[in-house]
Image 1 (cartoon, rainbow, N blue to C red):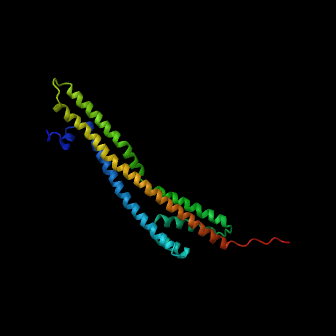
Image 2 (cartoon, rainbow, N blue to C red):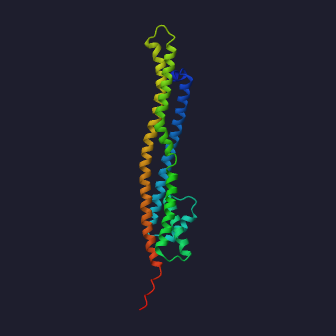
Image 3 (cartoon, one colour):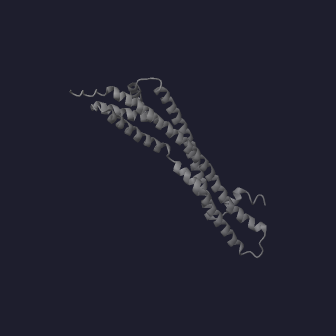
Length: 233
């Protein structure tokens, strides 16, 4: 009896539809684990890059030198790309001899906001996949279970005498689909909640940097703005 009710035996003796459901859930589970590990290492690298650039930024280095150093890099952190986009727009407006400090600041802020949105879109990639796996997998497993139980009872209808030994294998085969669905869904839900919280902190860090850098650019723009013309008496 133990040998007949082993997991491998139950899977091999399940109906074709239940086997397809199990195979699909296992594939989705492997894909979600791949996304989870990839996202863990990606967020760790982005966080380290942001911290490194933030230390360099607040070390008192000249903004022009920071921008030149960023322009020479092939790979930059999200915070560094936001800084580079804002500084690039600020310098372009200065080259066009825009003297109004509010115009300079608004242009730089719009460029940084656009870059910020692109960074968030890239960071949030594949989160929707984890959300879908976490919400849909239990129902797919439940479908496999319902189908398996229905198939088992149809087979039992042809028997004259039904005992627990004849009912148990069919029910157990069907319940394996629900177990695999939960196995795929639970890690995806936990990872999605963890990544969503980390990305929210990441977004707050970038927004704080945009505001602080905007204040620095505002002071710089005010210093280069020409004095107002004297009103004739």
